[in-house]
Picture 1 (cartoon, helix red, strand yellow):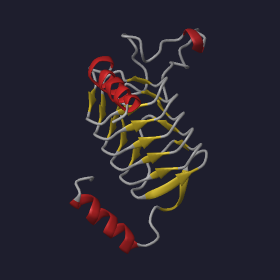
Picture 2: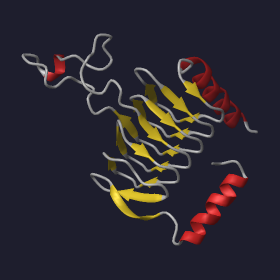
Picture 3: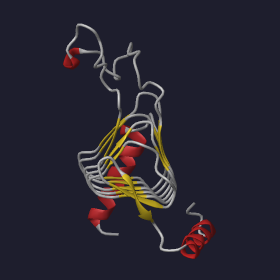
Length: 183
């Protein structure tokens, strides 16, 4: 192992065990530079997670194993600011980070299951579930739940096709992944 790889490993363990110690983060965590992770109540991240540089998690989330989030991706809340607070500009309104916040979004949990790839520049809004084996194309905005082993693209993201060409390929992928303990 080279010195750069060693230093990256030390940095990622520091992030996992010190900076983000209030969250549940599995082994083999990798974080690019300028990444922010915050959740009001709950963040759980499985093993072999990768989040690229300039990315954000800013809502409660449960992320499975073997998930990759490319650079400049985000998981964000739908209701981070109380924009309907009467007599208060949105900039000054209560926000989800406030201890006394009592508007929408408090119990909104985002779920990203195992073996998911979130492409460059994509945004996932809170409260959605991205099922196992899915791919979110670069630049997409996910506003609704995503089917398993599917590719979603666009703004808002819509299913464009299945991840595998045929059912036999999908079945073999699931069999081998289970055999190796990936899913």
